[in-house]
Structure formats: C-alpha cells, structure tokens
Image (tube, rainbow, N blue to C red; front, top):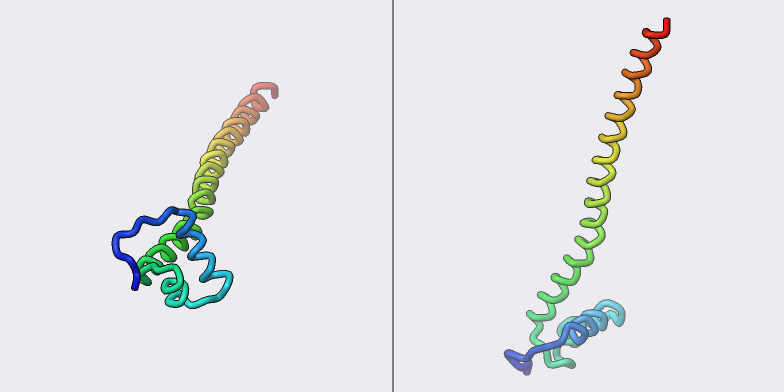
Length: 93
C-alpha cells in the first residue's frame, strides 16, 4: 500500500520515471515496487514531459524573436543606405 504524505527527492522521482520509460515496465508495477501512489507517478510523468517539450521550444522562440528583431534592424539599415546612395548619386550628376 502506498504511503501517503511521503516526501521524495527530485532524483528519486526522475529515476522512477526513467524506470517506466527505459525499462518499459508498467507504471502500476513500478509504483507498487517503489511504494508510490500511482497518481503521483502520472502527475510527475506529465510534468516531466511538459518540461521537456516546452524547454527547447522556449529557447527556440526566444532565439526566433531575437533573430526577427535583428532582421528588422538590418532591413531598416539597408533601406537607409539605399536612400542615401540614391541621394548622393543624384548630387554627383
């Protein structure tokens, strides 16, 4: 029977989820073996999957936003130089 109100370290939780993923053992069996409530396992697995799926995306989004700002700045500089080149080309003729 799972022990209620037991505190687990993050390492313990990660190792438990790894047992399910890599060993291919059913969550119910691992939960019984480690004396963890199944519902905690599901919550932890969902939280871990969310962290893994959002982690790289947030970095990618931040990088994308930075590149878009840089692209906009470079376009403005390019347009300014085009106008300046046109202006000075008219002055020299």
